[in-house]
Amino acid sequence: MKKTTSLAVVFIAIMLCFSACSSVNDTDKSVGSTALVDDTDNTTSEDEKTNAQERISDVIDDIVPLQNELEGLISDTTSKYLFLVEQDDVDISIIEEYKNAVDDASKVYFDSINAVNNRNTNDSEEFLAELTKLREQVVSETSNIQATQLNIDTYQEQLVDRFITKANELADRGEYSGAIIMLSDSAIYPELMRVKIIETKNVIGEKWIVNTLVRVEDYISAKRYERALEDIEEVLVYFPTDERLLGRKQQIMQDKPVALFELAIVQEDRYGGYIASTGDFYKDEVGDWQKAGEVMTDSFGNLYTGVYQFPTNGRPYYNDDSYAVFNLDRKFKQLNTSIIMRDNSDTDAVSSIHIYVDELLVFARGDITRLTEKIDLELDLTDAKTLKVVASHGNGYSYICLVDAYLQRN
Image (cartoon, rainbow, N blue to C red):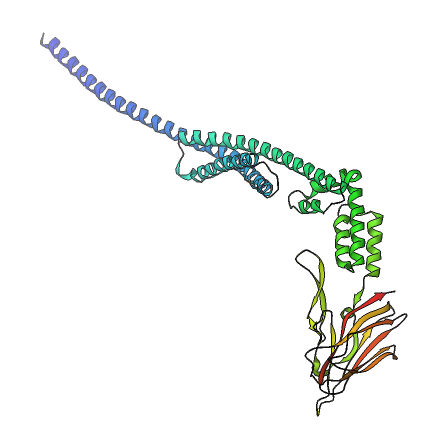
């Protein structure tokens, strides 16, 4: 019995020990199991975060080139509708519609730019959803702004057609005023204007050319050659091969007088180193070409430009004269000019002038004073090489001047 009890005690002890070990093992397993579950949750969280980042990067890769395209469209469309604002007879409600389209596209563009710039501080699913939505909006606004551009182009064509019709009506009445040129100066639609004018050449082009040539003849009659050439050049932009325009331009260039100051001076000696006054051309307030330069006045109050003046000094101890030799190079047939004494000459001034063509004296006049009337002069320069003008002193200090001095080409 004792032996049995002893064996039972031993068995129980072994079982208790096994149970204890099992309990320890179970505890260890439980702890290990818990640790394993926690590791899995962390891995899953990191994977989801990485996945969100990759998808955000993919959306950004898509949206950036779309943003660039939208930015360019916004800029172009803004320029187009701002140009329309400056035109006459435009529908303000249409312009407002174009402006609203640009404003809507601009808002979406800047919202998407700001979102992309916040990329480094936000990797959430919510941010991914917001960015994806913005990408769709950028695509939508790109489509809208492209449609707006087409609408603007169509409206501009309507304005051009209206302008062509108006110009045609003016031409029918003989009142064409070059209005088309004003619109064609636009930096946005020059090619459209060019095409439209050429398309309607049979309708308005012929009248435009004829009216221009008639106006050119009026300018030439008034000796306004520069304005005549400018008118021809305007029309040649659209009809560059028209023989009538080209022929008239060549003839004007041949007939247009050459100012004396444009000639090269072979030799000169003007008292005191005084440079002769020259003239140029400028546009007045109505757009006509006028001669410019230092204005000279004679004793009678007459005004002159395009002046060559020759100072002389007959005061005691001076006795100075002036002369200049101009190169004609056998290119001119005639000189038209007038001779005066400038009003700021001494009251007792007396001078003389001698003019030579190829060293041959062709004109001489002495005793010129402030009270001498303007002397008109026309000289034959056929086949001449040089023109020499000599102003000689008498009494006092004086300015002998050639005014309105122009040469005719051969």
